[in-house]
Amino acid sequence: MARKRSSGHQTMLNRVQQGKAQKSRQLRKTTAMSRELKSPLAPYPLVDINVLITQALDAIQSTLETGADNPVTSPKSPLRVFFAFSDGNQRARVVLFTGINLDDLAQQAFAWGKRQDETVSTARWLRVDRVDQAWPMTWAECQKRIETTKRNYFRYGITLDRSFKQAFMEQEINANAMLYLGGKTLNSRVNTKNSTIYGRRRFGKGFQLPQDPEHQVLIFTTKGFFIQAGRPAVHLNGFDEDTGGRNTGRRVIKCLDKPVVDKLISDSSQFLAAQVGDDGRFVYGLHPCFDREINAYNTLRHTSTIYAMLEAWEVTRNPALKAAIDRAIGYLVQDLIRIYTPEGEAPVAYLQDANNEIKLGGSAVCLLALVKYTELTSNQQYLPLLEKLALGVRRLQDPETGQLSHVLNADDLSVKEVFRIIYYDGEAAFGLMRLYGLTKDPRWLETVESAFAYFIANKHWKTHDHWLSYCVNELTLYRPEERYFEFGIQNFVGHLDFVIERITTFPTLLELMMAAHKMIIRLQSSDEHRHLIDQIDIDKFYRALEARAQYLLNGFFWPEFAMYYKNPQRILGGFFIRHQSFRVRIDDVEHYLSGYVAYLQHYLKE
View 1 (cartoon, rainbow, N blue to C red):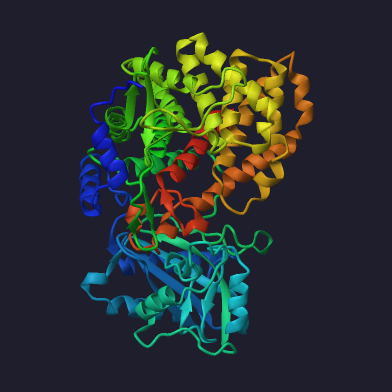
View 2: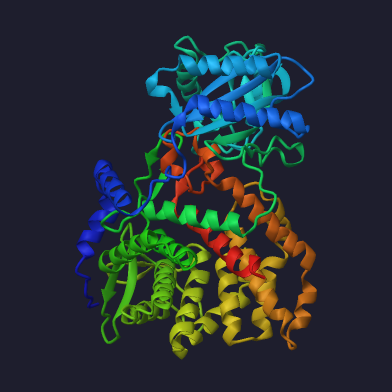
C-alpha cells in the first residue's frame, strides 16, 4: 500500500519511542517559561518570617475575640500548633509549638524566628494548624487502620509519642509518600524507607519507626488557616467525620462563584502553558512528592491538552497561553501527524503514537483541537488537514454496522485492534460533529449517524462516557431526534449517585454533567421533546453537578497543599490525582480544566 510520510516522521518516531535526556527537556521548559510566563510565585512576596508570624498571631487573636471557630482555642491544655513555612521553592519547614495559651505560643514562635539564620529567615507562606482531636492506639492498631484506607486517603496526622515530639501532619505524610507503596497496592501501607528519610530530616539521624507493635501512638486531626503577607487569613477546612475528612486542609470556599472559577481556569491553563517547551513538546507529567518527571509520552494526550488550553484561552485571552498553544500545535502538525495516500484513495491523515500505533482517539482529538483553533482565530490554514483527518476516521468505519476500528498498525494501516477503549468512539464522533459544525460537509454527519446506530444498538450509554455526552449534545443540534435525546439521557441518568458519592475527584464526571446540563436546557425549550425531562430527577441532577464541581476543588494544588512537596512552584496551579500519589499529568489537568470552563460558560452565566 503506497503511503507518503510527513517530513518530520522520523524525528517524531525518535522522540516518541526513545525520548530525550531529562536535563535537556527541563532546560527547554525553563527557557520557555522564563520567556513568556510570569513565575507562579509572582503573586506571593517573599518576606521575613517574623512578619508572617505576627500576621498569624493577629489572625488568631481576632478569632478569639470574635468567638469564631479558630485554630488554637481549646478548653484543654496544652495547645499544640504546627507552623509550616515555605518560600515556594522547597518543602515547607514544619515546627510544632506547644503552650498553655496564646501568649506562650507567641513567645515561642518569635524566639524561634529570631534563631533562624539569614538563609532561612524568609518565606512566602505560613500555614497554621492546631491539633483539635486525637485518638490513642497501639502502633499495630494504627497500621491496621492505615491499611484499611484507600491509598493517599488517610486524612490523619500521626504522632509516635503522646507528647507530640515526633509528630507528622497529614500533609507531611502525603507529600513525602510515607504511606504509599505504589504499584498494585490499592490501600495505604507504611513506606518504611520514605518515612525514615523524612523522619530523619525532621527529627535527626536517630529517628526510626516503632519496632514494638504495642508501642503507644496517636492519630490526630487539625484545623487552621493559611497566611500570605498583607492578605487576610484564609481559613482551611477541618476534619469532617461525615465525609471522611475529604475536604481536610483545603481552603474554605463557601460559593463556587465566577471569581473562584476564573482563577482555577487561569492558574491551571498557565500551568499547562509552562509545560510546553520551545519545541512544542510538553513535560508530560510529574510525580510531585519527589519532583520526578514522567518520561513517557502520549501524542493523543498532547493533542487533547491543546484542546483544553484553547477552551481556556477563549476565556482568558492570555497571550502567553496562546503562544504555548501555537508551539504545541506546530509540533503536532509538523512532527506527530502522518499523511498517507492509500492506493486508489484520497490522502488521509492520522496521529501516530508510540509502539508504531495509530489510535482512533488520536485522530479524533486532532479534529477537536484544530476545529477549535480555526473557530477561535478564523485562521483557515488547517482546513485541508482537517479533511484528511476526517477521511482517516471515516475510513475506519464498517459501512454495514457503523462500528469504528480503534487501533491500526502505522506501517500499513492494517487493523491491530478493532476495540481497545470506549472513549475512542465518543471522541471520534464528537470530533466529526465539531468539524461538521464548522464546514457543514454532509459526509461527517453521515459518518456520525452511522456510528450512533451502532452505539445505540450496543447500549454504549451504559459506559456513561463524557465524550458520548458531548457528542450526542452536538448531534441533536442538527438531528433533534428522540432516539438521540434518549441516548443522551440514559448516558447520565442512572449515574447520579456515582457522581455524588465517588471518593476520587474523577474530573470527567463534571464534563459529563455539563454536557448533560446543556442538553437539558435545550429540552426545556423544546415543545416536541420537553416530555423527556420527566425521566430525570432534576433536583438530584443539579445536586450531583454542584457536588462534583465543589469536590474537584480537592484536586487543585492550592499553595496550602503545594508547599509540602519537594518543588512547590513547579506544581502550583496544577491539578492532581490523589490515589496516584498526587500525580500531575497534562491529561489530568486538561479534564479538570475543561470541566470548569464549561461550568463557567454554561452554568454560572445563567
